[in-house]
Length: 455
Image (cartoon, rainbow, N blue to C red; front, side, top):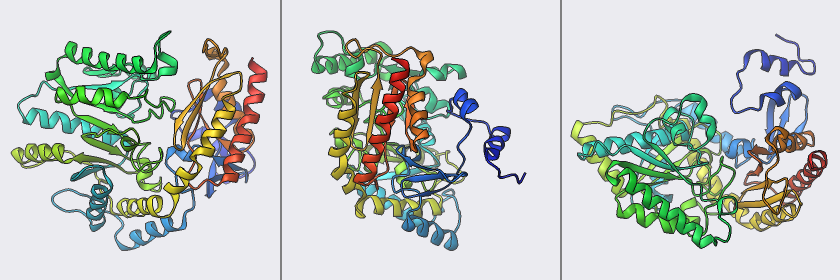
């Protein structure tokens, strides 16, 4: 097929591509945007239209789409050693150096790293690690995994079972033994007359009651995102982690911080657990780990958990788990460069510098009578659309309000993400003040247009 006339790319995409996480009515009505390249924080489609991508690709293209240093690092490593595995006592020098760097920048005194190809696989691998070590320690019944409603931990069968989203029911998930606690979103789920402190205590009491009901000796671990990303950018209620961490520690239940989105600068610190001042037993990393330039995930084990895993593996002389591309040398070289770019080339500083401007822009748009709440942390935020602000009543689902807002933004050259009744912004770390202003101006125009149609 060689026809490059307008809309031919759309037709070619529709003919042979199967869409995931895509609103099919929108595709049927508007077609597929086929992208050819990127310029800084902008992407360009086959018709030459430019879009400011306020979603950083999928949370991950934090250095933009054409960072010369990232490209050079990939090219150099491909020329030097283009691929290998991390099995059988062999791994690339880049893999060793990345493990050293991750241990250095982690909040742990000592750490060990296991590599995967995605955040989903990293969460899946962490669950298998927990099952493996508990069985090795004579407690094979400790298999239950605690997560939260609205949590997102991935799409493999295990990580999707951890994900507390209703769409997983179409797959017959979750699997047995995955327990979802209440979402710690005070604005939406706080009871009438309940203070935020009381709400947090209720979340802690629920955890305690769940452990009592299920049995602490049946629970393998608790997974939590510092900020719930794909659930709609939901920061925890005040004091949430300080309330739940001691309960988990008292019952010997490992706390896993899923930092696929929040890791490496998104909340203003290197790790989201730093932002919310808690110490996990392990960290899950992906996305920003390579600034989106390579598919990679990592399980970063704190010293205590790493020691337990090591003893469990030594009993049978191996840990029988891994992936062909785990610790890929090109991916590791890219990750080393990405960490340097974020931490040492001003990107993390830019997030901290512009966060007040980002928060001010969100707060201004939240004054709209059909925005019930703005929420977020650092360079991630959400605006929740409501039919009635006083009662927090959402729009009727058939109106597809957030999808319509996102489409109206696209028409102006702005990419943002609809999540439930919310519009999510998670811009690249390279954003300038002028580009941030462009983002908010275009979003405001889209909000005014859609709310005038549906209100």
